[in-house]
Length: 278
Image (cartoon, rainbow, N blue to C red):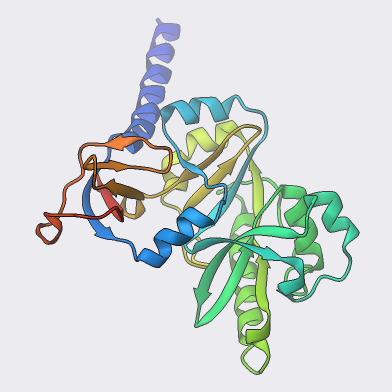
């Protein structure tokens, strides 16, 4: 009888967690707005690996896909940046090549207090090295394992906020700051499958308020996924005027897009940003 009760308890807990994850894949677009034509051209011309929005299949796969890494998803524009453009400058090249294989980095471009910061992301070894040489992060010792209940996580939020704000404020008196690109090594952690599963819904809505974010990125051997809170879920869809279909960048077709009265007739191919709701 005790074993049966325990089985029923754990089955109930598992069902609840799975239902929480399932809710992420039943959201439908209810509102759209056109994306500026320049952004549309940028989307087509810049090839950047973008994380896929997590669904139940992805979630099951990543739990069995070796080490899982997690980092905040900056609410900005995906971009690439060359080592020659960086400030603070990086003068030792060989460690960068050893860890990143090239001198162009993936980043997210974010405006904070009218200052553009390029948040560089990459492998945990690469980011930890960058943090060890960046003047504003090299003195901070951060836990490499993600644990939302750890006091080290609270210390990270406090120290990271202070360091980033000091970095930005110190650029105000620099008359040449427009001649280079300010960069910041965005923290990355390992996260256990247990921590991810048990705290998925909490992590999904967690915002550290260090810099503008709109979710989290999970990375493993074969997966690059994003977790976003419901109120920040968006997708860019291309409306094909000849077929009258909405498609995403993987050419998936969407039938349940609701147009506002302003866009009842569309004669040209247009990229729309769609907003989701449960």
